[in-house]
Image (cartoon, rainbow, N blue to C red; front, side):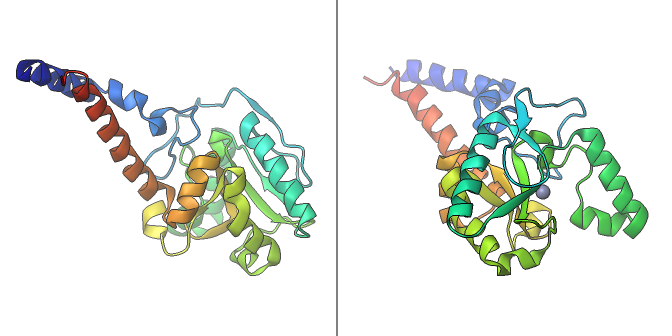
Length: 228
Ligand SMILES: [Zn+2]
């Protein structure tokens, strides 16, 4: 029995080493809801989500992936009903569009400042088609003052119920790599969004804990198979 257990552990180690276990991790699936994109984890120039569609909400016409679009439509409806109507400002952005935006920032404020507030191409979540910048209805202003409005407060406290998180939190700039952005929400699905909201930590921190849990589960599942 001990030998069998050792063989299964060796098999698991091999799986971990050749990376196929990584592929099974939810945050390694580029088309998944919890794929992590930040300054360290960049997207390929060619990545374009296959299920983008126009989001049918008030504001500038923007695309998101289908599931995120439906969730955002529900969020906007409830915000409107709660007396805090919103506008969409910026959703899916292609690699090349992000390259143009970033270059424009570099030209106007220099590389150092541009890197603090703008994403280099490939490092923006907007390329995933799961992020939307939102503002008060009728506005396209994106600034930190949003959190001091009723609309911004509502978004901060309710977005998770629709599967969105406020992605760049205040006080976690060193973890996320971005300034606080109360207007930028990212779709991860209701389950993860709710857990992240209650944890109060950024997605990077949450995902590393979640990955450990998944590894733990997989390891025990494998080893338990050979136990009597
Ligand atoms: Zn954004």
